Picture 1 (tube, rainbow, N blue to C red):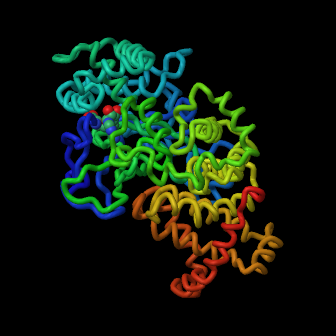
Picture 2: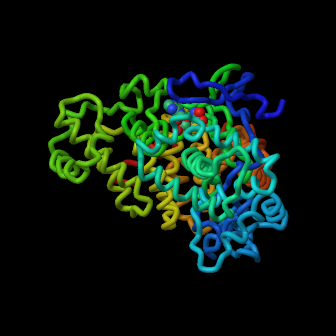
Length: 538
Ligand SMILES: C[S@@+](CC[C@H](N)C(=O)[O-])C[C@H]1O[C@@H](n2cnc3c(N)ncnc32)[C@H](O)[C@@H]1O
């Protein structure tokens, strides 16, 4: 049975959620539920159009330091060369094969449009709509089915959907209308039998933009662009998802996180499912315009994700002044961060601290010190545990900033804390993408620490009972064992992990089982190291 024969689209059991994706057979954790060779629409961010392949979305590391580093690690970004299209010079490809596939499928419909001299770069949704309209204009008979599939999704597929967008977010609706018309206009106002141009242009744009998912690679921390596909996008959201998206450049998959029985609905997460109830609800409403009715949200703010270590009234008086100042700073959006339990004043104070921590997270340009201070503020209040959001997300941001600033030892320590203490508390599956990606990062950092330049540190850790080489094997085995379940073996990520594993194991004479036994023995030292990463030593 093909992967997408294992599912069907029908009415969701969540009230008001429209249609959803359902399993037609049972799936085990790690199984591929749906796979498409490439999402129907993949559009790069404007900043990525010249350094990333417009067909497979593989990025070229253009910065010389990053390129050397990526090449030494065997990462595709270290060997990729993007050549721009000689026609438009606005997009590029990593190979002739990708260019040929893109031309045949879509680029021939946009090349002249986006290539007009001095025309500003068009946003991803408009470029996606131009290509779809181009295909439809060139071949109405075969493309009409596909267009109907797109227009069948919420909001355009629901008689009240577009009205709802217009009522809930007029600005968004107006933007979609304008951009939809722009795409229609750029394509030469095609007339298509049976379809009203007005509704098809706004319908295409809104369905792409309302339902798009982010495209990123586990080997690259950069946001590449957006993807949209009628089948993948039929999956509804749950804050307790049983499946997850995996992008294998350009193959898009939905993989099972849990055991799924035949007949069960498939749910993915549109926003971070471990965020507190109010944060999830507001984000889903603001971005996707719906009130989440999933099984977890039905229980309100009473779940593990909402719990603090203490009641809001127990916030120490030394934090009151800061919290009151933050309450004024975040007054206009405090309701998004209101916390359960306690009296109103105490709730307000903790909500203000929560608002501050999330605003640091939301700002993509935040400096390293600000992220560290936000973590320190929450942990020192003794209300947040390390596994209570947004601490885990802030820790991952801090990790990325440590890497950027070349702080190898700090990256190593925080990466271990994430691996041992924080991520397992949030995501029970060992193959969960965030756990795998963190473990891969830690393994590469340990590899650097095992080099001659860090001999002193290596010896110091060895004296404390931590054999870094052994720990390196532990992380390598972990990623090698679990990557096939989330990303598959013959994929960009799977191939890098497998070739690293083979290269390393070729020079090892001790049987893998013996190494694993030794790794087991070092686990308590690793736990101690994770435990010793405190707010003062971050
Ligand atoms: C990507 S589409 C999913 C397919 C959609 N249900 C349909 O009928 O076309 C996203 C839309 O589905 C609905 N939806 C998804 N998850 C939901 C949930 N947990 N609760 C309520 N509505 C949901 C919302 O209208 C959302 O904007």
